[in-house]
Amino acid sequence: MTTIDRVCKAVACPDPCAASVIWTATACDGPLPPLSPQAGEQLLVGKGERARTGILLIHRLGGAPWEMHELALGLNEQGYSVMAVKLAGHCGSLQELAGVGWMDWLASVRRGADTLASRTDRVVVGGISTGAVLALALAQERPFHVAGVLALSPVLRHDGRAGPRGASTALLLPVLRMLGIARHRALPGRLRRAGLPGTPWGALGQMRKLAAAVRRRMDMVRAPCLVIHARHDDVATVSGAFEIAKTARNTNVHLQLLADREHVITMGRGCGDVVSRATAFVSGIAWP
Image 1: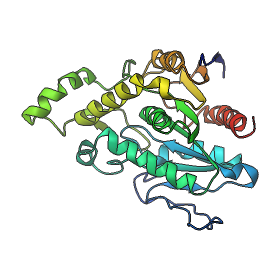
Image 2: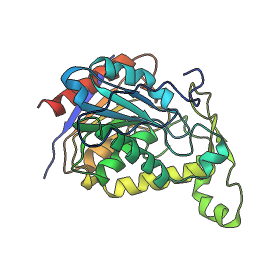
Image 3: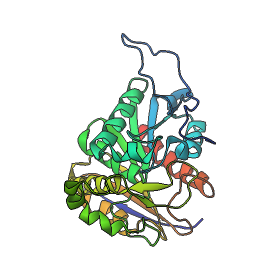
Image 4: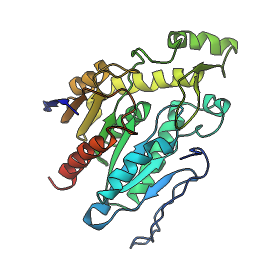
């Protein structure tokens, strides 16, 4: 796999929505027992010194924790403790997803980070697609508690050739919501190995709000970032990745462009390469 690297220096399961197997650990030393993941989430306990570094993985909008399973296993095999969190409103119906907002998704990420923090010494937050944007949002909110960010195929805007069809309709969402029209209507999507077959209009509008909030506060990111994006991403073009590298002025951003992948780089062909790059990045954080 060929890649194009750029370093920006700072100026200043078969049924993915069922209750998945949960790997748990024995309680850590200390006055409080470690927090536990929720049903449908995955927690893989690491081994050796690397087990004290936790990596939180966040799935896509309309996805499920299972789509992070291959990446989670790969990172766990390197010794890290890894948790794949389930976002609010997911692993259910389109109506359930349409009934929550981006702040609810961020609350799920906070809970996942707290769960890992109760078991480890440091937490790296990573995600795919909208999950990558949520990882950045948590890093903005907790600049001195997030040790690093893995932003995989971040979606700041759906501007790829295979983005949700009719996504431009989301611009009318405030009017439609006020009129009570089409709140639960979904934009059809391609068949996925994990998650829902489409995206509710309301959820797409929430994703746009999330991206706008994160873009306004990129200078609040203090944790080092690894951004991996496919040059020919079919959902979001590389412009979003370059925007992150340009606007995260108060940290170091390592941008890597993959030349032969599309949007989902956490499953299937090439996932091992992503694991290797993520491992090298996290190793530099834990043992600089």
